[in-house]
Length: 144
Image 1 (cartoon, rainbow, N blue to C red):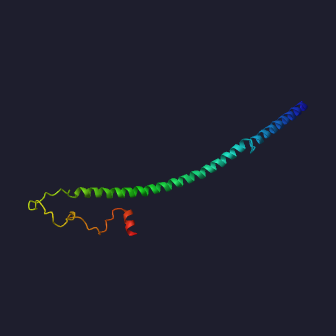
Image 2 (tube, one colour):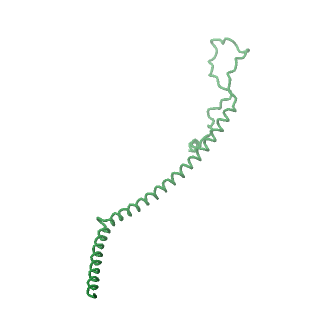
Image 3 (spheres, rainbow, N blue to C red):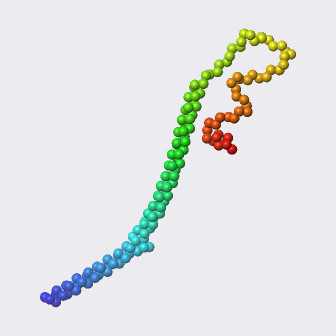
């Protein structure tokens, strides 16, 4: 009986050895860096690293663009407020209506009279006066 038990024990050990050898070969093929799953995992890991770097770059670019847009939006809101004030000021100005000719004015001027200069509005500013600065761009141009 001991002999049969020893033979069965040796057969079991040989079967386990054969199973471990086959399993080791399969595992080696599975982890092969060129053909197997190990190569695919290595490639995917490298791609994940690259995508992480690209993602950080995109986040930095988006943050920079957001900051720029916020500053431009602030400037646009300031200009909109100033334009609203200018439009409100335009509504406060009196509208000019043509004046009726006075009754004391002569009806016919003599033909030999001196040449007449074009009429000038009484509230017209002199031509040499500096224009008022309304926008930052104009202020920069006036400073230059």
